Length: 255
Image 1: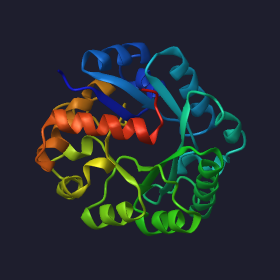
Image 2: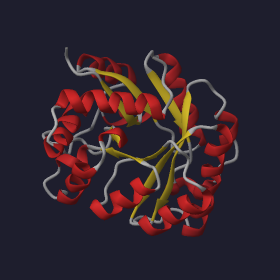
Image 3: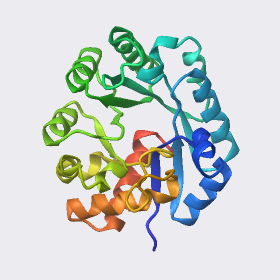
């Protein structure tokens, strides 16, 4: 039987801006064995768009959250979206100290508020962190990391991975795991327990090799999964089965 994959993090509302339409992207994904997708919100407007996309396709769910880049715009109206049946997680939210598009104090406030929302609504939490490991993990520890926390697009090394795993988080690996200049990400993937492992595209961003530099899409997820399999010493079938089970559990997707 061919592997069945879940892309646990993509942005279908954005794919049409850089590549195929949402409809084309979903069709191509299914043809590639990517049967389920989670499309992710980054502010209140894009979260609403993600919900609408999820309503349009079987096997697609949405998240609702405010990305650290957009934290300065506030998060009024976010909680009202969390009761929608298509919503399976709060996020993506977190800290990004690389670009600092929002003041760091505001990023931290927005992150803590969204952790509280995940607890209040018993939803998974999708975390973005860039050049902010210490503050990200400190806030998660202080606020209480939800049991179903995902460190999306994991970009750290083994030490960062261990710290996340100690908090009970899942690690989601993207096309970066295929990049020549990311040996530390591959080392982190190699040590991640199979029951904490997820795979994603972050489409339309971060296309894996050999598509690097072009618009990404969920159909490329098997390339990510195969790369993770290679560094973990497992088969792609085993990684697909494990990440399918893990994503279904984390996001409480139906059988």
